[in-house]
Image 1 (cartoon, each protein chain N blue to C red):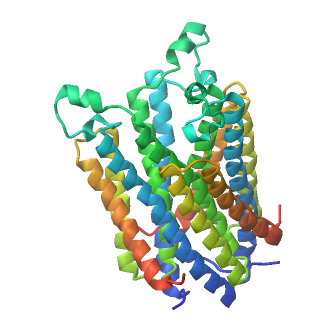
Image 2: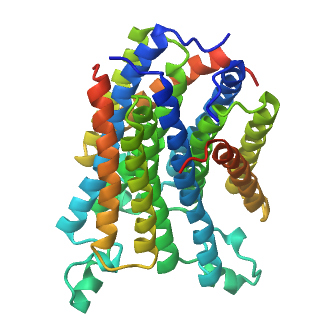
Image 3: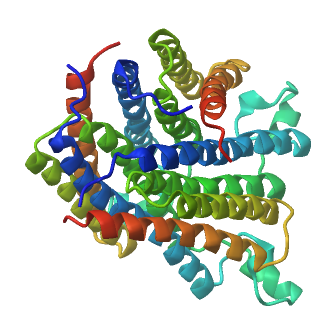
Amino acid sequence: MTFDHSMNVSEVFLVFATYTTLIILKMMMMSFITAFFRGLRGAFENPEDIADTRREEKFRQMRSHPDVERMRRCHQNDLENIIPFVLIGLMYSLTAPDLESAEIHFRIFMVARICHTVAYVCPLPQPSRVLTWLVGVLVTFSMAYRVLKMTFHL
Amino acid sequence: MTFDHSMNVSEVFLVFATYTTLIILKMMMMSFITAFFRGLRGAFENPEDIADTRREEKFRQMRSHPDVERMRRCHQNDLENIIPFVLIGLMYSLTAPDLESAEIHFRIFMVARICHTVAYVCPLPQPSRVLTWLVGVLVTFSMAYRVLKMTFHL
Amino acid sequence: MTFDHSMNVSEVFLVFATYTTLIILKMMMMSFITAFFRGLRGAFENPEDIADTRREEKFRQMRSHPDVERMRRCHQNDLENIIPFVLIGLMYSLTAPDLESAEIHFRIFMVARICHTVAYVCPLPQPSRVLTWLVGVLVTFSMAYRVLKMTFHL
C-alpha cells in the first residue's frame, strides 16, 4: 500500500484545511478570552502587565483567580487535543479516505470541541465536558486507526 | 536543491506516519493516566468534576496532589518535545532522506520518549529522565540540521 | 479551486521549512533556559532532580521561583502561538501564495517571536510584549484568511 496522490487526496485535503484552520482559530481565541478575564478580575502573573502603578495595587493583583484558571485549563485542554487531531488528521487526509467519511470525522470533531469549550467555560454540569472531550478523542483514535491500518510499517 | 517527490519520499513518509501516529497516541494516553490519578487521589481542579455532592467533600477534593502534578508535568513535557519532533520530522521526511537513517531517527525517538515516560511516572532516579529527554531532543536537532542543510533559503 | 502543486508550492515550501525549523528550535531552547534557571535559583518540581541529598535541602529547593515561572510562561506562550503558526502556515504554503508575500509573513512572524521572547525574559516594560505577541497572531490570522478564502468548503 502507498499513499494515493489522486483527486481524492486533494479534495479531502481541501476539506481538512478548512476545518483545521477554523478549529485552530477557535483555540487561539482562548488567549483573548483569558486576557479578557485577567483584566476583568484583576488577576495577573506578570508585574509589568498591571497598569496601576501603585505598589500595593501591583501586589494585590499578582494573584490567580478561579475564572482565569478555568480559561487556562480550557486552553491547555485544546492544546492537548486539537494539535494531535490536526497532526493525525494530516496523515489521515493523505491516506485517501472517502470524502464523505473524512468530512464526518472533521465535522464531529469541530462540533465536539466547540461544545467542550462551552461546557468548560460556563461551566455546564458534568458529564457534558467529559463526553464532548471523549467524542473528540474517539474521532482522533478513529483517524489514527485508519492511518495505522494503511501504513503499518514498523 | 528542491524537495524530491520520488519513491523515497513516499516510503519515508509511510514510516513517518506510523511512528508519529503511535507516539501521538502515547502522548494522548497521558490524559487518561492523569484523569485516573485524579480519581484515585481525590484531587480535582474543577468543582463540577467531583462526584460527591457534599459541600465539605467538594472543598476537600479541590486540591492538587503530587502524583497528579507529576503526570501533568510528564504530559506537558510530551507536548514540548513530541510536537516539535512531529513538525520537524514532517519536513525532514520530505527532504528524501535514506529510508534507513529515517527509520533510525524515528525509532530512537520513540524508544527514548517511552523510556522518558517510564522514568517520569515511576519515578526512576536521575539522570535517567534527563538522558532520555536529551536523546529525544538530539534526534529532533539531527532532523532539523538536515532540513536546514537541504533548504537553507533565508 | 484546488491546491496548486506547481513550482511555486515547492519554492514556498522550502522557505516555509527553513523558517519553521528555526522558530521551532527557538521554542525548544526555552527548555534549556528554564532548566538553567532551575539550577541557578535552586527551584525544582521533582525531588529526584535535586542533586543535594540532604533531606532539608530537598525540602528547601522544592519550590517555585519567579524567574523560573517566567521562563515557563514564555515557553507556554510559544506553544500556544508557534504551533498554530506552523500548522496554519503548512496549509498556507500549499495554497501557492506569492513567494514574496509568503516570505514576508514568515519573516515578520520570526522577528516578532524573537522580540517577544526578549520582551518576556528581560522583562521589557509593556506594551512591548503585548505588541510582539499581537504581530505574531495577526500574521497567523492573515495566513488563515488566505487558506479559508482558497479552500472554503464546509
